[in-house]
Amino acid sequence: MRRLALLLALLLAPAPVLADALCPADTIAPAKVERASLQSGGRTIPVSVRLPAGGAKAPAVLLLHGRTGPTFYAQRLDGVADRLAAAGIAAVTVDYFGADVPKDPAVTREAFQGWLATLDRVVAWTAAHPRIDPARIGIAGFSLGGFLGQVQAAGDERIKALAAYAAGLSESFPADARRLPPLLLVHADMDPIVSPGDVMALEDKAKELGAPVEVKSYPVAEHIPTGDTWCDSARVLAAFFERTLIKGP
Image 1 (tube, rainbow, N blue to C red):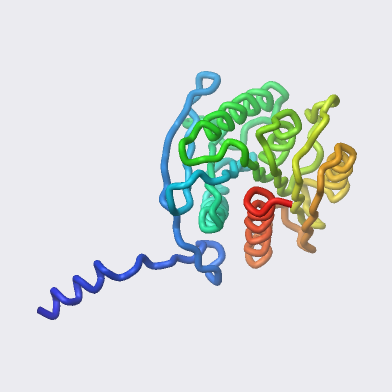
Image 2 (cartoon, rainbow, N blue to C red; image 1 turned 120 degrees about the horizontal axis):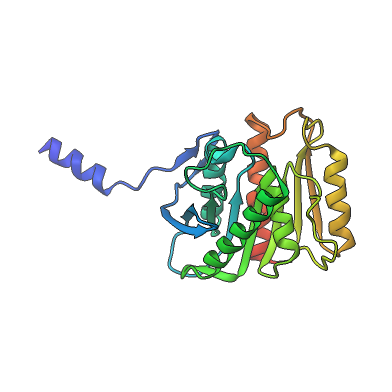
């Protein structure tokens, strides 16, 4: 009887709230993950979606990894995705390199344009998802993903908010761009790869186009910060998209 009572108690107990793997002080309910794939340029593109609770349509944020690929960024993006889902925002994580493609590829103009074409397809796929509100889509791009995200957002009215993490102004930014959505810039003051001047160039371009800009900088010498700095930046990202895609200006 005691064993039966214990079993029933375990079955009826509420699901545990787990901590972000990289930020154990933050307890976040893990979201259910949907996995899918789509075709782009002859490549299979893995996509995962974390949806908020309930059945209503929700805003969504596309999470774009950097040049080192989805494996390096997996724990970081999973944690951010769960934060977004807990805030009522769907999180779409995409491996725009494609399955079975070597990671850390050469960033050529041809490759960049191919990744942009893939990103455009993923935006369309996201907008068509039955649980996602196509009028409230954002992008959070990390390093290379931030360069891709800004170029996509400059020419895509579907993108209503953009976060560029450790990214400066892209050489491929369209010269005839007329818009950028509200922009969050997150960077390290002593980033060994993307300088504060590079980030400021993107900030200046966004202001020139009339976009509201928020900047969060950290006094560390890392490209993608770790430890408490990463955890704080993850909270900043989630709060930005909650303001821009849920609460509005």
